[in-house]
Length: 235
Image (cartoon, rainbow, N blue to C red; front, side):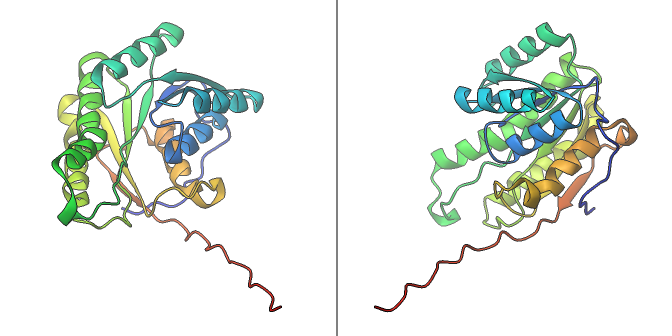
């Protein structure tokens, strides 16, 4: 299925508490801001305390509700600690957006075991662990994964995408509503260019699509304009 910009009414997520991993950069930062603008109370989870605090302050100034939590979600105990903090503050956790898009510039033929395990832990192990914790402890909490970008076609990416697709398509067997978003490319850092990703996350979080589960959404994105280097005048 292909998704672009899905229209939703203003502040459709008022009353929801949503955790976003990797909120200190890339698509995590983008979607956290979009969810806060849509009315959700957003737990900003990441490893850069300074960046998370700055984002939380900006969102609060814009009328949103956001709070930073430093945690490495590839470590199960870190995630559990963050989750307990959210439940202490709000008494609920409606949904989780987990950014599972770690990539490497190393070609498949040169990829070391250590580099592969880093990718595995960041993208697959963490996703399975979060889904498992939802099934055990957070009945009714939904999970949206943002997976490896479609412009990455090296060999090691395909088993990661395949595993994530299998996870979301069968998560219902464990009582978990899960969906997977596959952006066309890496985040540009420009909210306008990357908006289809955050729009899709917000739409999936809204009550109107609460029935949607097990879906893999390819999200087309506009190309990032190339910077033009001005020509040097002849002397």
